[in-house]
Length: 407
Image (cartoon, rainbow, N blue to C red; front, side, top):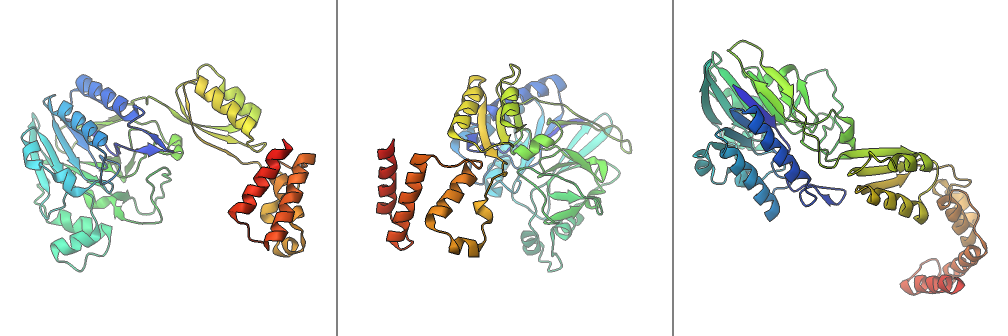
């Protein structure tokens, strides 16, 4: 039996102010995924949580998910989906009985008995269990068990109440922070693990032949090859560019007791996300390359501050290549005087003019102010003294007016 396992679609996601939906990235991925379903012809699609990016999705996000589910249902395959921590359980569960008539099985709200659907092939039955995102507090109240104190005990308590026939093949769809004790993973990105928060040990899932995980945006197995994260379909953070290339996990279950065949099928994004780092000239040389087009870019300059001239130049190059500048910053800190590290006693003994001059040098990479800039600095010092150290809107307007007259 063949499954395509995906997770963390985050439909409606914005990255650095750019809509992954409005920009066409998520619609493009959905089209490529549907083409993959046509070519691979899976028996089912497993969507392991975070279908939406927020609990109250936009109308466009709902329409996009509706299109995805409608298209999948029309392909004579089963769809299994659960609520992740970004989803509204009630919205995922809405009309679940009606959707099941179209072979779309959705579990949003956690119940003591999990949604279980039995499929079958030439090798016998395959039981698919749906475990929406587990909060210990909800499980403790649901099961009336004060012994449930953390995520691991909550997941184990729920699974212990299922009648799992381990002589048959069993598949679980879950959305949790699953770990291997003693092993540290470096995840990064927009969904990361922080110091043990929400951990569930991988051996909690020993009764299952395959566990389709969501929650972490990197793709990797946990504990054993058949317990794994699919990762997000797109990079939703520049840290995620350091992860392996992204794509659905194709899983084929053979007879009970045999290892499943597992492979990742890459889906290239509409706009590759990339970090460009180096000196201004190195960055510029990289950006003008003809093969660098249609990208989402983070630019990091190491040898000088970003002036308006540099920004406009980089922005113009990126725009001419139909790319988008998402982030830009400078790591340059080789200032002759660092106003940011000025000691309190030195600041107290410095005049306002001296402090403004230090600040100017820090922002200009150590350059000295010219005559007009010195005049503005002196005027600023005069205004500060006359204001008693507290500047109002009128003071700022006066300084701006003075600077304008010097042009």
